[in-house]
Length: 248
Image 1 (cartoon, rainbow, N blue to C red):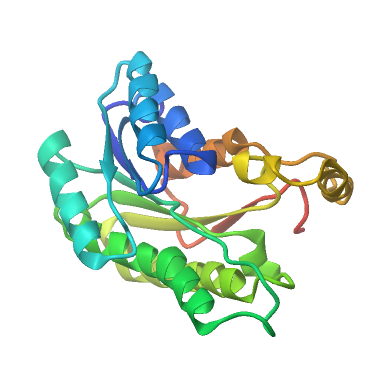
Image 2 (cartoon, rainbow, N blue to C red; image 1 turned 90 degrees about the horizontal axis):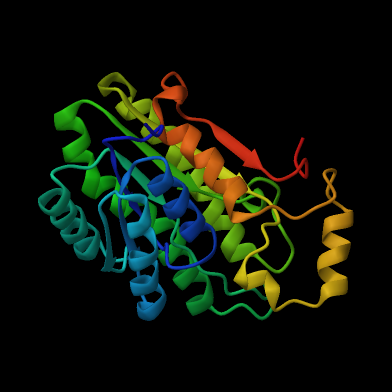
């Protein structure tokens, strides 16, 4: 019996990186997993195949959480396909890093739209289902950058800080209905995105972290697992930093 046995989770942006790690951990722990992807169709299909081995129901959906109609259609389809939903992990996100001096309005708006609006859209779309069943866990993936800022990432930091404010507000609004909403702020997590970086740069980052290593997708997934499970039944409105001590 896994920690998420009999529960259905929606995970956005799960074809690679942190989202993929969360999908794998949830399936291993007995959850039925509905996950979304956008451009990575082949990776999405491969993940669907891969997760079958854990014996739970798994289905990938091509869906853009930054569009309200997509989010509403997705939740309706998942409820129809799986018979319900108990957990939502809002993980979909992009970066368009550059100094403010060079940042275009389009670069700013697109990052806010994908990273922040998608959290609003998915939460709004699943709210009715959660209210009806008087339970649910919403987990929003923020970032340490949303807590402390970062040069060259004003758009990304603004979107991830916005997620924290949104999370705390939703926790206050929906707590009386036994719906919990928490955020996770990952630090330097080593994924396909960081694999293309110069090794010396990566090592410098590792050296600056108290635990002296980058995090893994599994490190973030384990924190998600805790917040998704009944083990965290009295925890809501919190930000969990999964950063090896970068923030103390």
